[in-house]
Length: 113
Length: 112
Image (tube, each protein chain N blue to C red):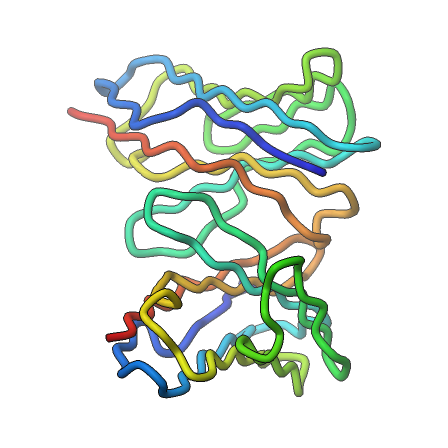
């Protein structure tokens, strides 16, 4: 079945540091890939997505590229801010984005001033 | 736009009682809603897919008689945990689909 594996956290960085959160997946066919973010006390929000190989999703300075050859969708940001502190979830959907989602375990990110 | 609410945000109940959790799409209509369960420091696990006007589709291993789902309108789905026990204590999250999934803030259930 489908599965998503994220790097284990928590991740602690200083402000303006470079961020990478690794995500690899196993799926049949050609899934769509997503990164969701959960800020403290709030629901999950879609951060970015990519629907086919080599697509790059980007939002709020975050980027992730759909790599079919390595079955990966790593999240990166060049300079993190304190406000980026949150839990980040990698997810895939074997259908359209409103289909069922399979989530990774989540990575807690804490950014210090 | 695309706001999803859940009520209550947290609930404590005695073992053996039933608890109803509401999920509402506030500014859009959602044919499909999803219910997830999240254990501490773990990922979200899909419990069921709820389609308006039809029976919910449950994931393997989820007891449909224990977790009753009703999706009576395009803006409301409810999850009822029947005869709750301490092992049902968890964080329950719903989402509603409008091109993408929009998530509610979650409901924390503690069964004593």
